[in-house]
Image (cartoon, rainbow, N blue to C red):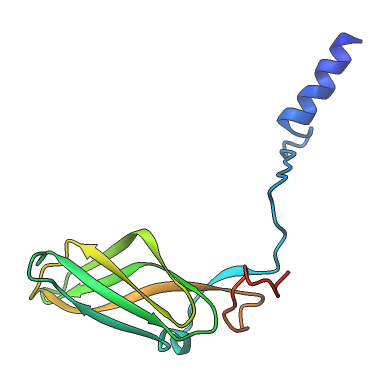
Length: 142
């Protein structure tokens, strides 16, 4: 009987015989939202100002103004240099920009006078891939 209890406990703790883990999280919130990369039209709604400060010529400073109806999360930017080299830089931590708000971030290692152009990588939360950006934490959203 003791072996049977150990066997059942092992199955519950380690997983089912097929190898799938059983998991339950009391803090998990079911949501109909998922994170989706911004389309070109949505990226056009993010106004970006870029430059360098006099004190930090090796850090590209970006200010993002989110004009979308939901918040966005920007992971970083792709920077093309005058030399033709392409660098992928990350915001650390990622840059969260609420709807109708602005936030600033910096990308280290991009020297003043060496950048040709850049593009940012951002995502927002949607109910469907083609739907509008929405705030999944708004009280009106399940």
